[in-house]
Length: 149
Image 1 (cartoon, one colour):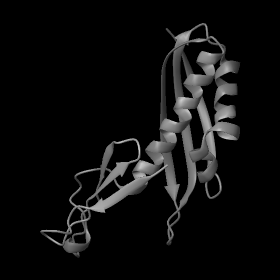
Image 2: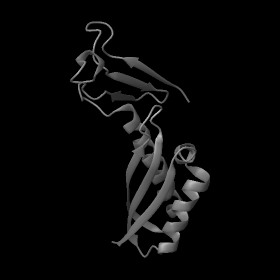
Image 3: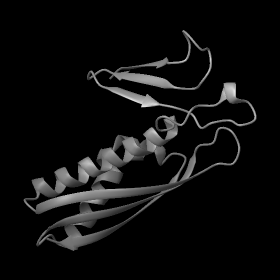
Image 4: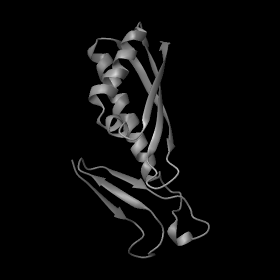
């Protein structure tokens, strides 16, 4: 897996904290920093997600992918899956994630709660590389709501 990240403010302005990531699969992702009112040259322009927000989003995508795939392989009629992640970070550098809660909402027909619980557990214990990595510094908790379609 490869990715190239380039600063977008380097050529003309030498300011701002925008970056563009070009992934090995041929996609691009913009990232930017928060504005810094004390030192504007050190801050971003709030034009894109923060880099660490993309880590959290990627983790949500990784685990949601697993949950849907596991349920589909179990021949469950899954029709929707969302996961809302809320995270806390350390107060001092490096400001790693210390707590992450993932609240899943799974929609489908006749899906047993035990199947959803098992899919989430399998993702976090075996398949989701992102949440397993983040679990080295963060306490990860999960919950779910099951909605009958």
